[in-house]
Length: 108
Image (tube, rainbow, N blue to C red):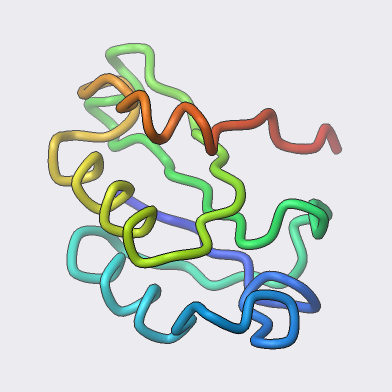
């Protein structure tokens, strides 16, 4: 499974989200998935943004990328990691607590 973590002007910025250890967030997610750090995903008003990609099995089961906004504390990061461990998109239902973070990514 791959997780894309935005780390540019707002996401990953101690200026915008000072109470989160941004490096620790990437480390924790890296324990359960391949983490790809990217530049701006054009949703700066929803920092920190994480996109969880389904595995091939998850995609075959109907899973699609899930965009999560405001993943701004250790509890939210742990919730994302737990969902990934359970299978992620297509293989495990999105927990209700993460539904609060879910949004539609920008159309390019």
